[in-house]
Length: 535
Image (cartoon, rainbow, N blue to C red; front, side, top):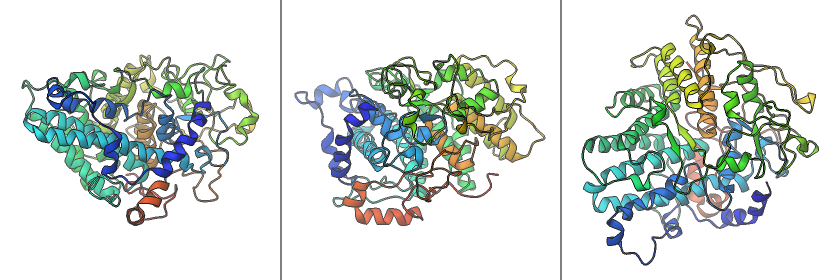
C-alpha cells in the first residue's frame, strides 16, 4: 500500500494528461539509438524487440514496483472475480472494494493497454509488413497477444478504440463491444492460417522474444484456437449462433487446442517477475489476501488445491477475508503490517519467479464441457470433459485428486477469524460429483464453479465468467458505497470510461456511451452480459 501511494501523484498526473488513444502514443516507445535497422534485422531484433515489453504488459510487470498491475487488474478484476480481498483500508474516499469506483485506480487499465500493447503491436505490424514473407508468423503471434490483451479491455469497459486505432488526429473512434469481438474472431482466424502455413518449415526464430513458449509455434497455434474458443463462449448469450460457429471452428482447426499442462500459456523469464507476488507477499505490499469465497468453496469440498492456492496465516490455517468490510483500519490484524504475518492468508506465490498463469488446459476442458452441454459439435460428453478438466487442474497444481470426482461435499459456512458479524452461511451448494440426472442449469453451475477454481488466480477471466453466468455464487460485500448505483448482489459489471477520454475525446466518448447502451457507470452491462437464462 505504501508503494501505491508513493506513486499516486504520478498516476493522477498521467491520467489527467494522457491524450486520446491515437498515434500520439507512438512517441512513448522508441527504438534503441546507435543501432541501425540493418544490424537489428540480423537477429530478427528489428521486429522482435517489441514483443518482450508487449508480453510483459499482458499481466503487467514493471521494474519500479509492480504497482501498475495493482491498478489495472488487482484492485478490480481480481477482487470482483471473488478470488481476492484486501485487508487494507486505503482510498477511503473512493474504494473499489466498496463499489465506489476509483478513477485514479481504474483509468490506468485503459491507458496502459494502449501505451504498452497497442503501441508495440502497431510497430510490429508495420515492420512485419515490410517483409511479410519472412515475418508472417511474427505477425500472427502479434495478433494473438493483441487480441488476448484487448479482449480483456473490452470485457472491462465494453466499447473500445480498436479497428480505427491511430487513424484519427483529433480523437479515437470507438468500436462497439460487438464489433470489436467480431474483429477479434477474424484476426484469430487469420493468425491461425498464417501459423498453419509455416508449419514444418524453417522460419525466422522467435525464441529470443518469447516469454511463454520458447519460440514453439505449435504452442502459439494452440493458444490462438483456445483464445478463440474462450471468446466464443463469452458471447453465447448475446449471439448463440455466432458463438457456436466460432467455437466449432476453433475446436476443429488443425492446430489444436491447449489440452495438456505442458502447453499452458504462462509468462516468465527475461526480467519478468510475477506482479501478484508484490501484491500479496509479507515484506512487500501485503495488500491482497485470499477471499472468503475461495475458502468456503474449496474448504467445504475438501479440495486439496486450496493448500496450493494460499499460504497459512499466523494461525497455521488457511483463512479467508470478506470484501467490503467497513472500517478495516479497526482490524489491522487481518494483515498486521507489511513485515508481519497476519490473520488472513496470503496467496501461494513464494517468489516473483513464479510464472503468471493466463490460459490452461483445464480451462479448455471446461469450455469443451460447456460446449457439449449446449449440444455443439465436440468429440466428447459434458461429463467426460468436466472430469478431465478437474483432473488436469489437480495435476497442474500438484495436488492429490483422491475421491474428489465422486464427492458430494458442499461449500462451507464462512467464519471470520476476528469478527463474528462478518460470518455467513454458505451461498453456494454445488458439489464436485457430476450428476447426469441434474438439470442443464445445475450442471452448468458445476462446470463454471470448477472452471473458476481452475482459472485461479487469473481474475480477469474469472470475473467475466461470473458476470456471464452468475457462478460461482459469492458472498456479497459488507458495505456498498455506490450510492445505489451498483446492486450489492449483482456486483460491478464494468469499469467507467476514463477521465482522459471525457476530457480529450468527447466526441468519441459520447459515441462510446451510445454504443454501450446505458449509463457510463459500474452497473451497466457490457454487450455479452445479458440478463437472461444461461441455457
